[in-house]
Image (tube, rainbow over all chains, first blue to last red; front, side, top):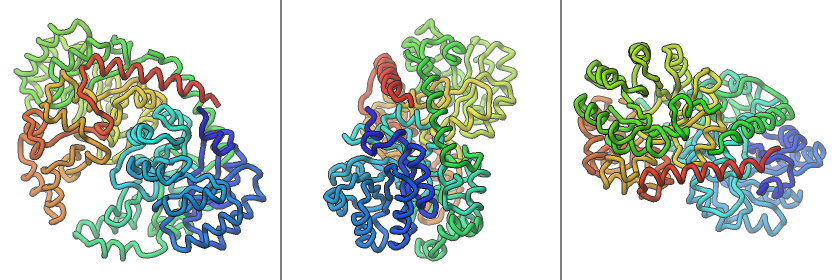
Length: 314
Length: 314
């Protein structure tokens, strides 16, 4: 029943999403120390940075932690070598084909989890031999699926299609939504946005403040012609809209996106010109909190949701 | 606690959405007889048809039922007169400003519920004096909000903003998602798509079969320049995509949409050229069932979800 906590040997079935420019060793170790599973996000790290973060994370926590690796990134051989040399026991892979790396990681003793946004890729990942699946809905921040399937619809669909432990992501920032995800058939949750607005995230304070200020409709899934991404509607987004209104080609959009937009926004704090990847659930986040408080509040809220629904037996 | 069942004097906190071309007296009375709240969808009816459906529904059930009225439709005075003359005790309003009709309906003794897709309009409806709110997420079929907020994110936001009983809609077609909605803070659910694929819905059999065949990604929220609508991706949708690719204006889109597309598809069964309004949850629907079976299955599934989550206290 408690598949996720047994699989990772953690107290709570809460995984912190491995996010670019937010989840370094400080965030990952804080989440693991608080009873969840912290993930170092390798997507925004050069191999040498990743190694440094792993070493620091090992010093900062004696609890299990993992690394998230977007498989389409360059220098994948170097990154995988570091994970194996450092005996990382939990690897989350995303944005790419799990059939290439899963068996190598598993042969090295890793638990491998793959992130998907569709039934089709969930089945592919199961066939590739992963140990668990993260299914991510349309409301999630960052890169996202083309089908636009929301968490509410996606989780039961994937639960029906696979036999692996299932982790729900997208739209989850409180104990209420965590309880909802479990009702839908998930065994645990992956939480991103809520942890970006934490003290320990390496995100720029300007970005954290922008998350706290966000309301309903502050984010949008855009750039579908390139790679669909959910981000905040800022000045950069208005420029994209302007390009759309002129019927610009993918090439023009790609050129305008340029390089380093995500770093510029999320790490360097350029709120106007950066790409600020964040989920719809930012509309529910009103305070920058330490990780320990975030987890305690989620658990309290989760138990309240359980109490509420227990009165509903029909 | 059980605000919705007390408010409507029904057994289960399940409302059948009042949908164009699907929910006449047969569907509404079947849902009410099975312990939910059936709604006649006035949106696709002339006043004289509506009156006939109300009379037939009264004969077919002794249980409470209601009428859904999209406020932007023509002949509103005539429709409201019928509702009041026929002593309809429950009216759901949508697609329009609730401040005009709410007090008139309430003075006539009606319970008034308004459908929204945003926090802003939920607060407006509360201020207009409605008795409850339906909050509808991005995954819902038919006309939908511009913010694209999913049910998972929308329900906690609206729960926080208002003090009225809250009904969750969008993405709900099983007891699992019903339990999820209640965890999120809803007091009950409104279910649309699942009831379209029922024996009793007046929808064309071709449309019902198309729902059963639908998979992930079979629907899309489109025509955002006119009124955003979630519908199936069919030949008509491909033509819209073609117009988009040419950078066509709203006028061109409007002209191509034309009149009677919804009726053509959902009532007359033209699967290629009709506008087939349905939710993402159609991907979870695999069988055309009688209403009584749909409700029994939802309750069974709901109680199973409660049992599952009860083991999760943290």
